Length: 271
Ligand SMILES: [Mg+2]
Image 1 (cartoon, rainbow, N blue to C red):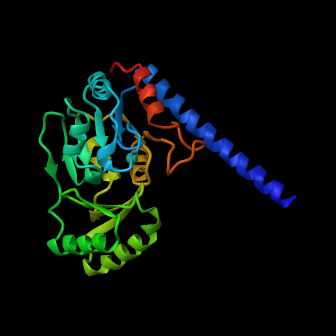
Image 2: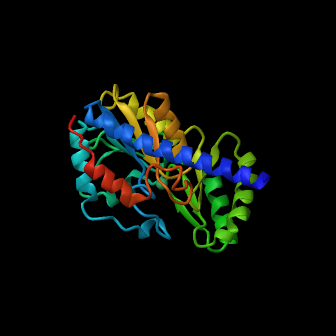
Image 3: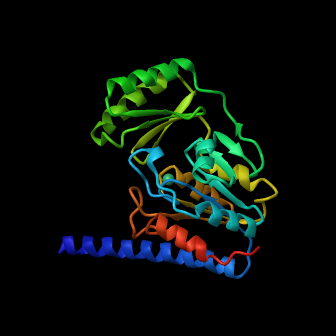
């Protein structure tokens, strides 16, 4: 009896989540149909592209850059990429076009497509770099990715090492007080300078004339995107989740990257 009750509550909660996620999607469609000015903020991996075994192995659908370029034009430039990747990598994936972008969780920014990439933080200490290198050497299969403004430790090929990796990195934090923070993502732990998040990146964009006075809509699939969802909500907009490793289909507004791209294609933006 008690079990049945629990299930009823569970399914009820799932249903409410599903309704909220669908409602959110319709709400944004309605805003666009009513010609309300929106600003679009898009994560890349797991949002526009399917996640691959390694970051360099992703498949980029044909016409993705073209689609984003058309959207950016319709939104008078109010479209920005907010990613954990360095901006140079985002450019490579979306070539030949460039977009306003925040890279390495906001540690790098380019405020307009034609602007230059600005690193908002100094490089991480060489000692920290060396420590991470030896951690990666001690845990075979862990792939260390130096992003300049931050370092990612990928455990996608050795998921069983996640706990050891996290514990080792957590033990390293006190050695460099107030210098870096850990941010867990999809099969990756990011070592980031303190104070940089996707939420802060979204706020930085929202303060710029191109994005100001528009309703921010952030689409993302990862825990790190939650900060950006909250930032968008606090500015009168919303965050839309993409289902995958972090969000269930019930709580997400999109079932996966293909669903996001179809939705973006059909969005009647002309603002
Ligand atoms: Mg992502």
